[in-house]
Length: 214
Image (tube, rainbow, N blue to C red):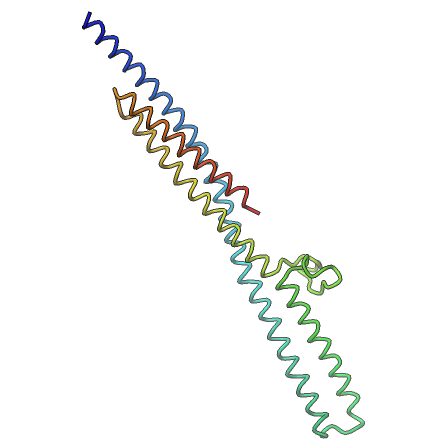
């Protein structure tokens, strides 16, 4: 009787262990697939983040070039004004200088408007203030501030995916340990519970990161 009881207990332990191993294997496959999807999406977001960072630099340089041109025109305007005020220019030449000053002033205003659009973006300055084209099209400028915001948002989103990947990896390691362990159904069940917790946490982080992406 005692022998039969021990045999039944051994069989029950073996069956429970096999069931735990099967569940662990299924969970490993499930969360490994979710991790692969998360890695794919995260890779695309990282590419978008790099594009945004590159555009921040590119558009900032564009903004600086407009600032330099504006400063040069302001210096030219000051010089022309000084010529008139000093009396060096004769009265018959004064209208020509004043006409030149008017043209320079318009250039200054144009550069200033272009700077604002490059800094803030076409959508934020309004259609009536579009002055800078992009490849021949008006209203297509994404401002420096917008690119910075996009870069920061992508960066934040990818960090959430990184956390998600970490939890997925821990989950898979726990699953591997669950399969390796034999004849200890209680420990295997505990590992399966931890797998589910870590896997769900990783999934939540990944979904959150996806929702944060622009």
